[in-house]
Length: 279
Image (cartoon, rainbow, N blue to C red; front, side):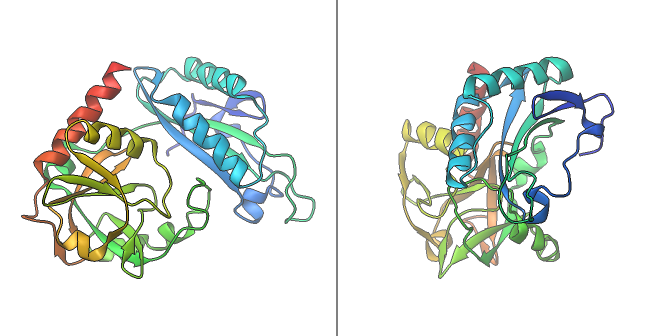
């Protein structure tokens, strides 16, 4: 994000200019990459599905044996105070909990809590109409149920993704796919069943809502998806907070069906947009 000199951020109970918000170099997030975070969308100044994101944030902290210094009520109040201060109609809020200022660069200390707000751009209409290509890579994320700050693999693969003319990478292990670095993965089978991987994935909030929406019209399942399943799929798409639902039309050299976004994917996207607007 480019620095906006008018935006403020929250750090350990204080609101201050984003440009002046820093951590000491002893923090375990710097020394060892140790921390968790979560990210949610703000539309028309209102947080979208906030309770779900807060629950996941606290669960990630528990899995990483970190303690959030605020109760859920206190954290919610701080978020709303930051929204009032910055007054951005469409934005993203990131909550970061770090391992704290470690005395020896290894042992955790009192966690640092940061809340930052940034302008948000959603996928363009052109991306939705054309869909995207992804490549696969042999990897399973450590502690998949925790949203940690460790994105080393995804970032390391950025150049490989670009060289392949792709937009993202789908993790797989022994032919079984799991997730993308920042997104969940879905396929639509030939009998119109919507399927998403059940193991080794972060339990995405958009994933949860899409499963519920899909279940109203189609059969929806959480189960193992293999590379072979993708080759036979009718449609494929990813889900995330910032991308909502984005069609995938090619995985490695495999073109999905006719290479165009499918009607079920686009219909679910509209259903998700409608759901967000009802909040």
